Each structure stands twice: as C-alpha cells, then as structure tokens.
Length: 152
Image 1 (cartoon, rainbow, N blue to C red):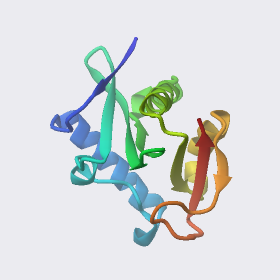
Image 2: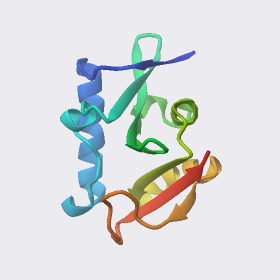
Image 3: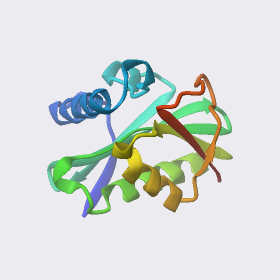
C-alpha cells in the first residue's frame, strides 16, 4: 500500500533520491538543459513536495510548483529504482493532479527531456492526457526539452 505524504525534505532518504534524480539528469542532459530542482529549490515557498512510501521505504516523490493562481507545474517526479514499473509514478501523478484541481488550477504543465531515457516519463504523461506544447513560464525552446500541458 502506497502512502503519499507532504514532506519537508529533511530526511536522508529524500536527500538520496533527489541526489539520484539530479545525477540521472546530468547523465542524460547537458547542464544548460537540466531544470530539475535541488533540495533548496524544492524548499521554495512556491513549491509543495510529497514523498511516496511503501511501509517504511521511500518509493518515489513529486512536487507541484505554483506558476500563478491558475497554473501549476509538475516537478521532481521520481520513482526509486526498486519500485519502477509498479505504478508508483501513476499514483504520485494522480495525487499531484488532484491537488492542482483542489487549488483551483485550470492547467498543469511540465518540462521533461527529449532523449530516449525520458520516453517512459513522456508515455506516462501522455497517458494522463498531457499534450505537447511550447515553452511556458521562464522556459525557452531547447532541443533537449519537451513541454507538456493538461487542462483540468
């Protein structure tokens, strides 16, 4: 049973998972195309972060950044390696979309990589009705990025 909880990013498990996330981004993207947030970035007041747990093991995480009162951005979606392919990301994304709707957002957007390593993430988002779009917020066109959005 997966439990998703608001997280203050103080635990060592979260630090390790975010570190893994950032290292993976560095392996698959040039530095100028990495838009993943580090721990300090995830602690900003416009970002809300959740961790997903199975019993006492960290299974994944995700965050929602408020762009304005009607538009949110999915950030830091990550599934721990032992839990990949087990539906953790789907459950975290459902949680983020439910929270976005609760907040009254009309749109949720995201940026992810264009490379093959990011194909599973793109398929996940497509499966939830996200469609490809141009850059939003402070993003600019980048051949290493794809932008997706969903009206809610």
